[in-house]
Length: 271
Image 1 (tube, rainbow, N blue to C red):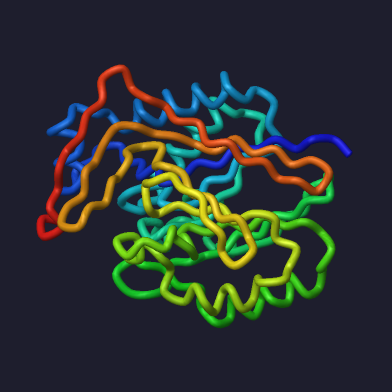
Image 2 (image 1 turned 90 degrees about the horizontal axis):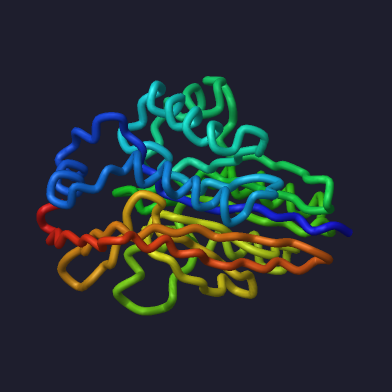
């Protein structure tokens, strides 16, 4: 069986203007150009991993959720990876225009299954339910997922969603965990899921969701360090290089360290 190589990155928050108050604070105070960050990140990936089967993007593709922004973003990514399949899952910043803008079809479903030739399957979920952008997999989607996993219990499966279902266990990180993570665990525990890829946190870590490895990555736009009373926003970025062969998934995080590191402190009450 041949090796399958794919990339995972997340939380682009693309916007052609970056005119929201939050983004102005980030870009004006740091001088960081997030579009340039994206292009540099993509080129870094291309150099580091030239032979790819596909790319996973786990949500928050654009910041304001406009159709024109999705189309512009897709054009940028396809300009670097013109022959590589792109698979995404929507995040809390991704609006109802995601289907039309990113997928090119206003009726396209936001959760789906994709089978690959190398005896590997992707299931992408839409975790945009819940309050305050914290994420929730709705009941009907959980039933659909259970049917997919029961209908094909043998094919090794990777699961992608925006809101991470599991965090490291530290109390400060629990604000990032998806609302109904236990309901999702009830569906996936025992299934042949070899890895879960998520985003939302803008922080990189690995954890175990039951018996399933769960991977996040820093935003490809800006990193967040969440402290007790404040965020620290920085211009480090990163992505995961993933290799699957003979039933084994290997995930390696690659950090992109800028020549000059920048950070901005944002108290929670200013968000």
